[in-house]
Image: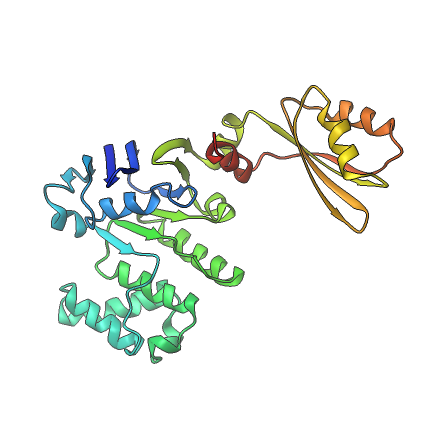
Length: 308
């Protein structure tokens, strides 16, 4: 159990985390989302004992991180955004060194390294030097580092940052497998990743909690808008914005143009498909497509974190 109690952190006059209150039960995969500067990394650093809060605290399994950070660290595996891996070491030697550092018994070290190699899919690169690895493999080695002492809680800061789509899927698969037996808290900018991986999503904006729940629950309850997408031919962008923007239910009109084809996204207060169709029918435009968009985590994120 992780309890974040009225957590606040200032950097000078800037408030990075503002009275954050969250409880995370054992066994959840929790995604921490927010724009740059929202307070995600600061929250994770306080949780892992690397920063002190200005006020409030975090309780991990009944232990206050402010009062006993070393004890809290024993139950947490932490992978920061940049993996702290020595580039000149061979992967096996590095993991053996970490096993020594973490106090793993000599007779257990080799077995534990083999277990982590299988979990993190790094068996085939154990003989390679860290500097010769792709970023995806470096992240997997970083995961093995974070898991070495078999922690109850795994904290990952942007674990897929800078990875290509295939590497992202691979890391996501590993996280979901690890999440079957551990509590995982990770920050990310990739909304599809959070939606596909997490049991629960926390959206933070300007240090405050803006939304909390499963992706499905947030899509059902949070957004106040519906979205319509359409494709028009023989239409002029400004005219489309004027005609469709004048409809009562339409809140916003976004358009993009490519070779005379306009792609339009409408943010509406209700289902306005009939009104939109009738408005288009009165014009000399060719309607190639019109559909109601399913609510997405991206729409919710933009609504909750946009300025003002």
